[in-house]
Length: 88
Image (cartoon, rainbow, N blue to C red; front, side, top):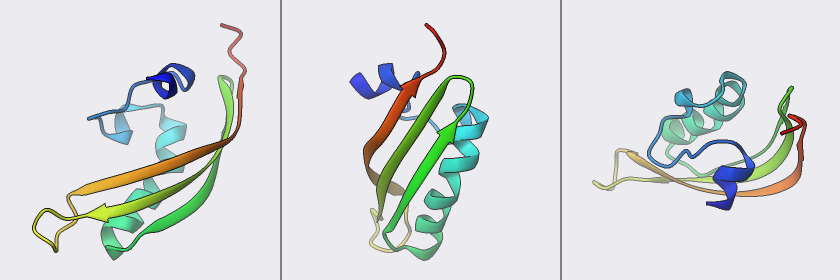
């Protein structure tokens, strides 16, 4: 997808732990909060490192196939700013 190309990695079907460590540290708390509280979660995030400056908003919705236990997350995100700093 265009997002995977722009942000240097396809995440479909993967854990956020499999992506860059600084992304995991930024992204994981919202996912964990959504699963723990079983409530929607909204936040604004930023990663600024050697490869990119990336600012975005996201909404995380908890989904439960049994109606109780969150076992899926539906995530919508909007890029606010993105700059490739890698020189590639």
